[in-house]
Amino acid sequence: MPKGYWIAQVDVRDAERYKDYVAAAKPAFEKFGANFVARGGAYAQLEGRVRARNVIIEFPSLQAAVDCYNSPEYQIAAAIRQEVADAEMVVVEGL
Image 1 (cartoon, rainbow, N blue to C red):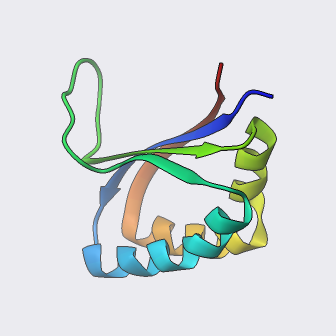
Image 2: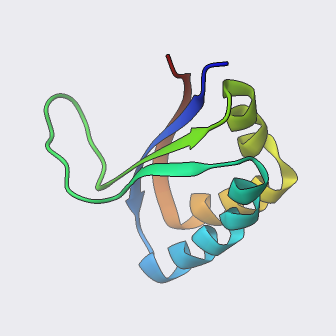
């Protein structure tokens, strides 16, 4: 079964409150088997608009990735993130 990946580009407006998001999201990530492939770090802009923070999270399947996002646990975290950061997020199926 192909894995699923969250790809997120984020601009954090409030770094202190973003820590609350990270803590709140942890139970959902653990529940759905998330594995962080990239979390911030250096990047090279090649084309188009970019944000300061780029994140790739691997899940056991596309469905697990979608279920994690829609879970009550993650939605608590998402509400915090949406207050303190701007983001684009997609879920893609791996090969």
